[in-house]
Amino acid sequence: MDAYIVLDLETTGLSPQQDRILEIGALKVEEDRITDRYQTLINPDLQIPYAVQRLTGITQAMAEQGEKPEKGIGDFLDFCGEDILVGHNVIFDYSFVKCSAVQDGLTFEKMGIDALKIARKVHADLDSKSLGSLCDHYHIENKAAHRAYHDALATAKLYQTLAHYFETEDPKLFKPVQLTYKVKKPQPATPKQISFLTSLI
Figure 1: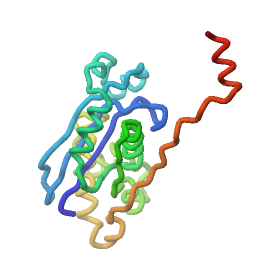
Figure 2: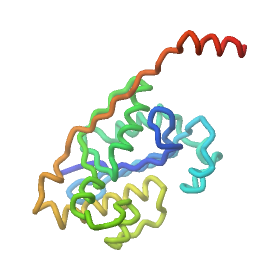
Figure 3: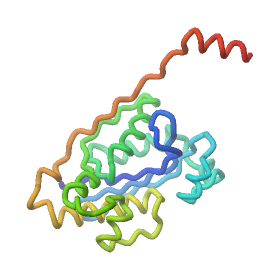
C-alpha cells in the first residue's frame, strides 16, 4: 500500500453503542514513512470508570478539557480521507468511530487491515496476541501503552514487521477488506417503560 492510516482509541468501555471515545491516536504512513499524525482527547460527557482512568492515565479533568465529540470525530474523518485503516483488532476502533460519526450525521465506510488477525494466523503458537505481547515478542518499544497515539505507533511498527516477515508467503492475509459494523438505531420506549418513567416524574 502506498498510504494508510493506523488508528488506536481509548474508550470509556467496550460497547460502541453505550460507551464513548476518550482519546484518538492516529498516524498516516506513506511509502513506509510516517508523514502526519492526529492526536486528541475527546470529552465523553460522562463519568469515566476508575479502572479506565487507572489503565490509561486519563483523568476526568483531562477528558473534560478535550474536544467535543463532533469536532474530534469530524477532524479525524478529514485526516483519514480515503486511506485504508490499519489497527490491532481494527473492528473495535472502527465500530466506535462509525457509531460516533453516524450520531453526527456523518458517513464512515472503510477498507481495513487487522494486525491481530494476521498475528493469529502467523503466530498461532503464541499464548497471547495482545499488542503488548506481540511488541514484547518483536522487541518493539511502547513508552506509553494504553495511550492512543503511542499504541497506534506501536501498531504501525508491528504491522510493518509482520509484513516484512510474512507478506511474501501469504499476500492475501495482508489485503484490505471492507470493514462492516451495523449501528443499531435507538429503540423507542415501550408503553411499559413510558409508564414507569412517568411514575417517576
